[in-house]
Length: 244
Ligand SMILES: NC(=O)c1ccc(N[C@@H]2CC[C@@H](O)C2)nc1
View (cartoon, rainbow, N blue to C red):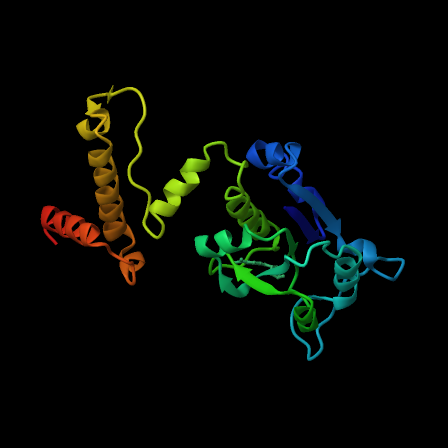
């Protein structure tokens, strides 16, 4: 996958996108990431990219021309591409969006600053996402969040491909409790079933605990969840245990 990032602060990406798994994925050639400073496309010698808003009001607005010229100068090779604008007005970004976007060959992320972009850039983007209902100084951190979420779904980026399938098995539920060595840590023991080697019992325990955690912490995720008969029974058992 080719990722292109359009930002006024390209240096913000040096750390997160070169360290850790994403950097390794780039070394392996699974990912390639290019950061473009659209200030380089400003037409005046002072390299202005923003100006005062028509209609008055606070702050400065990003002009359309530098960004659009940058987008057109770095157009995707593939038709299987998507240009994404980051903003609080966007669609709330979800794991399902990440799964869909991980199948693209080419993604572009448009990161704004100040009061945002001139409305007319929306003719040059394909989708708009928000990572949460809060305002940041720029679109760079949301872009990094989305890139991390999407990239980890690309085969080969995280070694244990099964761990992603695992996620899909629990798609829509919160993760079940995880344990590793030691078996007894300060008197807190690992649940016996996990030591039993009985895979069917282990999976059932994991599904039950994922349902328990989801019901306790994010009951909203259970609305519309496609329960199997077994899952309904497991949730009922949890509710009986918890005295719902
Ligand atoms: N919640 C979010 O995903 C989000 C995205 C962008 C953002 N801020 C930028 C700066 C100006 C405008 O381009 C938008 N804040 C919050």
